[in-house]
Length: 326
Image (cartoon, rainbow, N blue to C red; front, top):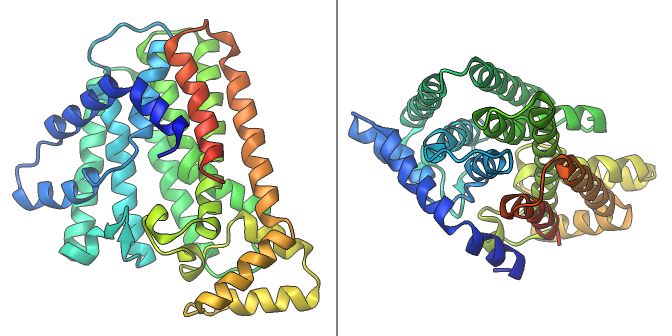
């Protein structure tokens, strides 16, 4: 574990304990199988970034509520539901270093449990009795669904543009982190300016985190990644490192890269060759620069708020998202 990650985790021990407790207390499955399948992913070691961001955002905005963890877990439930469904659609075999839920329990069980977890998210959202929050979560759910549909349509497309890629990751990732931060501000009853600033922070952090995840598919190993490197390619997903590199490649280089990417059974050596092309053509460096720009803008968004422990932690989260790319 890096020093930065250890520092962040050391500072948020109380928040993470409260989140874990709330995740279990609020799941409330009456069907034992639903609880087992849900727990397979929910309690397999996720970062809890989304609920943590909601709590930190609320504190930065001045909230002293003692029930924040109860509402924060709706974001972990929503995230988990999408992961269960995504793994099934993508035919992914691994998630967080263990077999995907559908591989263990079956596709029908996974789909229905994903629906159940999503329903818990919406029920907790309704409990806020805050129409702004309800509107936010409904918008996120719709955006994430459409992002997944668009990504499915884009599968295998070698002509995918950077703009199309950015549109998908905004809907798949950035809107959820933005929503967590915005909800924290709403629960703190902050001003419109504060809500907007928190929204900008969350959106930029979300974009940076997704770009970092996309980089890790080419720069990390299976043990660190929790799945096999190259999984995006095997699933037919073109991400920013590849899109940029293809735009800079000559005809022969482009043909060779596309030949590797078109083969779902590409070898370890072929994958290593592709990664070297991404480095040489600037795809990896360009994606790193884009992630850094998003983090810088996220940090700028926090200038509105007074200094606090929680604000410092939000700044460190930005630094951590960049550290993951190296």
